[in-house]
Image 1: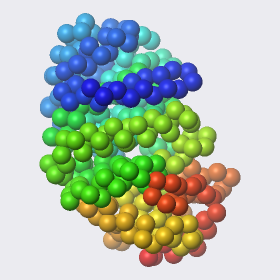
Image 2: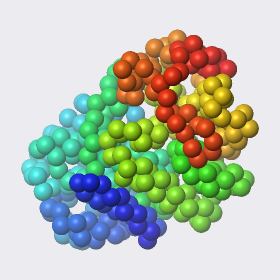
Image 3: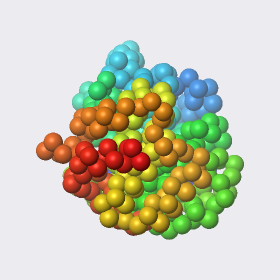
Length: 361
């Protein structure tokens, strides 16, 4: 088991990367001195694979477990879904010492975390991510929330988990498209923080399916990506400065997701498109070289991810949607733009005309 400690001013917690670790969930949680009540939140697909194993582990460690399955998909990441969790918490008399455990991908983690942040003004929360995207990104750092019809993740709270347990073996049942989506976030870490990780992935022939990654490379991807996220979050928990770099590719990406109703492209695919757009913006502004942009695009394509906007999307609508992005400050859209592989900067000096030009390209 490889453990990364995420140190924050108010608290610290472990990110445990452990093949076969799902069977140790109860044991690891028992060391945290939590209350005995647990509400396990998942979706029907994940629960069918791993729900009974997780519950058995928790019950063997002495926890009293109830469970609830939310619908699967970004379009269900709403306040209405969270209300169902509140109702379940009420039915099971969840007290302040209780813990909500999120067993699933980023959508389940975000909603469960938000419910935990707001039930009784905050109860314990544990992340057990089952997608690559959630393992390397969504499950770490305490961002929780739901979507608003006008934009992604506009409603939320910072609520740090007590533990993040990553079991790479569960990726064997992850659909190929979802695996590729997670690779978008891994590539992001290479561009914004870890040039060595980027270079290691360039050496790999294929990154588009779980079976093409050696066990060692997968472990390296998980450890380095989680370490990058932990390093950034430990320096800036609530996105006052540095943490904004984690939004690389997300500015235009979120707009594309929202405008296509979360049904045409998934989150990772949207981030891939957003990274290509941000990289081209950086080239146009003279911030980085075309060669670096080409390397980024090649790696994105190697992961089987899109590099172009979906057909039929309205470019004006994308530019308009950027104004409702969480990262807008004083009316200006802030972009994360690369200056070299492993280094980025945040700027609000990007005009609508420059954005439009890149979208056309």
